[in-house]
Image (spheres, helix red, strand yellow):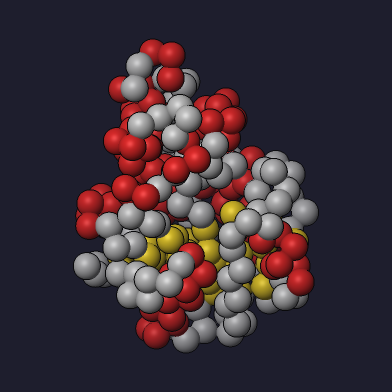
Length: 233
């Protein structure tokens, strides 16, 4: 499975978004949702993340690394480039593969890894994060819990060293990435793993794909969604 990027975009940044097979995604939502609902939400999260990223003027292209054919087709339809997870060796290997895919064509590309489960992502918030990251060879943004990482960048020519998973905030700092001190970017920091995370994302206002899935799950689950496309800010 491979699709080509939109060559007409002028932004300097290439984003790499890893996505595991939908049937395996979001297992920590199991106390609240069955497997079918979790797969639908995982895809919707990724669609809203990719759509917001592609709406950011600083973004040249988005490379999604996944072996899920359904997700790949849906994200390619939004304009992402999709490549197979040929290493099949976990999250960080998938990110490294995505980075190699980008830099095979543009060796000095500015890269950033972005979680696939940021349903409240806004293009304007992402633009502020990318602008701050551009001041450093490598930088990262911790998640809302302050333990993990939702964003990791490598400027043009800088090595890309992903250390995602668990307490990745400390690991990214330990390998020399600069932590970005940004407060007003809640959508970039709010990934969704647990029911509490999902409630917090709903309060921020999820993108249209996530809002539609939550609405379909029933009135009690429906958030106050925002219109598509996501507004800057």
